[in-house]
Length: 433
Ligand SMILES: Cc1cc2nc3c(=O)[nH]c(=O)nc-3n(C[C@H](O)[C@H](O)[C@H](O)COP(=O)(O)O)c2cc1C
Image (cartoon, rainbow, N blue to C red; front, side):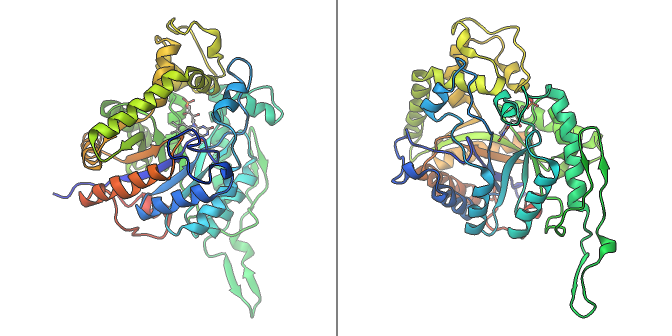
């Protein structure tokens, strides 16, 4: 029996910012990190390997939660600096023909009309290859850049995001698919009876609508979501076409995916209409020993720069981890930020967590292409689907080639991932298996 295929995607961790500048293969153009070249090369490689999509992570603040200062973040270029992901989308779209491209745009920062219009425009110019990574934001510094004291309470951010997404999708649907006639004799560019006012009046938003542009090729471009908390998962069950999740092992992956699928059914949806992709951080080399040595070096770097790891934890939770004894187990902490992450940290010491952060995020896939392809196959068999989300915050071109031209051909040879894009729309490729 033929094996079920699974999906591949890439998470541009730490967004449109400098990559690999401290690594062994920084690239001859590292100082020009703000130019799109490295990312264009990445997107072309992903397309050659038939990935479903590339997500551009984003946040819009210079964090200052660790030690009450932005110094540690700037020292390591940790989650900063970042350019606007939408600028990069335009370059990636031009360089590719099939790859799905998903910018991160926050419901706490964009007005709904502006976001609906931007994604609709991207969907037109990419001829149906855009998605939206729908996040609510979690860092108080970002809220302060938009005139607020801090983020809204965690669950209320999701309540607001529900109304936001409802309005965005209404705006996307406001033009019927056949509204544009382009009849030069009548003349009738578009039929007004097929373009509908939205008149949304909600708890958080008012918007007349419709969008001032026709329905885009995908109509409703795929929505990506990553809410790990109970409230986040409910939001995802209603709105997400793809969910990105960090689960450490096949048992946790299966539990998570089964919950997503149950929630989808409860929300009246076909569970197969949500593709759950799991965060993984592969290290591929020509021998197992060489790959393990690279993983060991990653760990050594994490141990040496504990402040960088703790600063990252502070950014996600708005909790200053510099104020705790590094060897005392954490307890009694609450966050208005990433609740699911903090829940996993309770009971461990900051030092243990810091040393684990860099290397234990995502699934550990270490070895030769053949070995790792085998592990991935087994995982998917055990979990049931739907694929992987590769990430490496400090990747370089060599790393990309090892995955796209080393690991992926091995997956393809085993019939596990696609060898051609069968559809022109991103959504259709995502839902194909
Ligand atoms: C793989 C992954 C990627 C994410 N990307 C972003 C991002 O680009 N921007 C952002 O503000 N939050 C991002 N998040 C955070 C989520 O949107 C969400 O806030 C977080 O998972 C906490 O969810 P919870 O509060 O429901 O636990 C990401 C989370 C995961 C697991």
